[in-house]
Length: 521
Image (tube, rainbow, N blue to C red; front, side, top):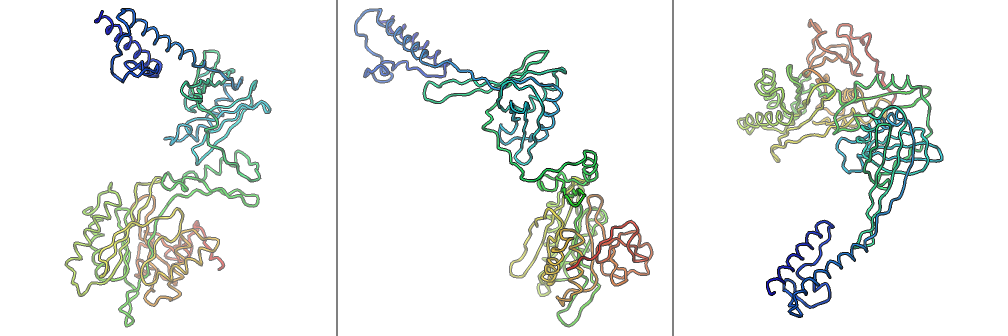
């Protein structure tokens, strides 16, 4: 009998452990007596009150009775009915497909992968809403709404189910299963949406509508537009939309309502330009207005420029551009950051052998393109050297619209002043406004160390970098050098100070070029 009692007790403990795993509630085993108010320590076997062999069996029955009492005290689930709707499969699918366009590819919260469904008895409509917090799409369609309700369910799962439903009517009903938790006063809620058609029934688990982000209401007067005209306007600008998600504003379309007109404007980062003067000065004693300060690669989408000291950066960049054009410095698939690192190393290694007594402060600007076409983006870097700080390398931020990005040299104050005047006109925020402001700055002679003819190079979305000709004071120039009597001038593009495309021989604006009249200031 001494051996029988422990064996029965172990069996009882094993049974209790198995029951706990099924109900997710841990029941006491060895220290069962402690739960009943006894003083038995944990892990210590309780001594039988009598040598009766039936004692362990009675203890086991007592524990079984206790578990049974706890199970009975647990409340039964309550079912709360929600919407009851009968709708057309075609209307449901069309509205669901429309709102699904706002579903984020990688939702940051589970609720953002859901569609909010609201059944409205008063209007006899179903309202659908999907959002990624930046874009919200709502759609409504007529249905037979028997009971109102609201719920959110995964939009992609629901879309696939409705898509494969046969044409006809679909019945929708939602419900909430509420269960009272035994340990506290809280309730667990399980949301589900039932869908049935001629082929079968489906049940989708969802989430409560109260968790869905609130929709922002636009306080504006709605206008009615012809569908055809609106589509044509979007088609006319869609080719210029950027796909760079890091500059989200460029992926959209700017719609402007004017008098009896609707203007569409979609502009990604289409080009990047370097502009410079042509003056090289020796203090206040002498000057030369035909110095080259810009370099554009003929084979790569890379442009360079310098200001400050002339001797070292002009010689170093002349060597660097030859290496680039011959494929000795850059690779076609290299990132701009890697290219700039190679250029920086080349410049710094060469500068080590430059005479210390001839060293003067200078800045080198470098820009390159990533990719080609509508998906292309640009990156801008600057390399500087001063006697006090030594080398400084940095990447410059590029704005989301056309404007002055970086101004360097002794004439930067004059450039910024002129640029501000143009920015406050009706053409502000365009490339031609920035270039025209730069030309005005040179003509103002505000900075005695800046002057001569403007120089211009740039990168577009496709192809290698370009050098542009400038028509200035009825003369033709390339990188500060007059080329009036040269042949083959039509091989490059030409601009005047108003950034109008011109004929290099007649010096007049091209027949199909857009005119850029000077605004009032």
